[in-house]
Image (cartoon, rainbow, N blue to C red; front, side, top):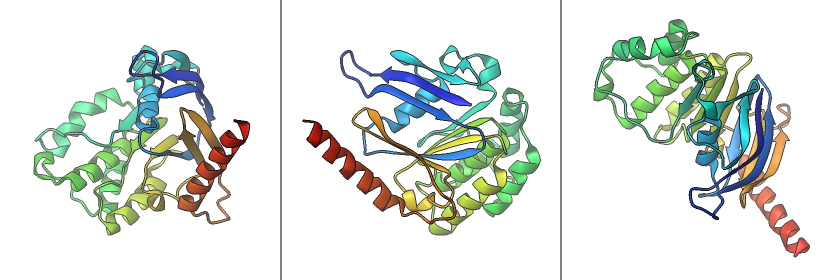
Length: 238
């Protein structure tokens, strides 16, 4: 289980981005993290991964504080940031370099995910476009078999066929006990994948709700309506 307990964070003194955020995320779920630009979605992912340290509060993965950067915990966390660079080396060499850090790494899942993206495993990462690099990195992330997988805008830069392949890759490559958090503005790309929706606005969580997979949901409308209701509630309080 992932527990976010009263987490507060700001990059500057007396200027909070997130204020007393609390969430509990269960194993075996795909969570969508949504919010307007600048509301702290990426910041929350980095706090969860232990790349940032909360001003107050804790993030616990199986009751261990991720900000302590314990190597045992880090082997169960993988983050796919929105922007990144990959070294100009062969994929096989890259995998050999990172596999020791992820004891559950599964090369068969890597191969299967690459095939779903219609990609050859015998590639040089330096020769790939940004969209191709993103697909390879997502395959690596799923093959790492970590309990916690964080993805920030994973479908940015993907063409329409690749977005369909992305959904298949996630569905096929996910561990049964895995927690996946996807932060994105491209809601149409992920709405069929999600079990749960989290919306943050004005430094706090305004929506934390499970999705009924038997009832299709329009996430764009859901997001806009949630923000409108929150504005109405805040106005009424004033």
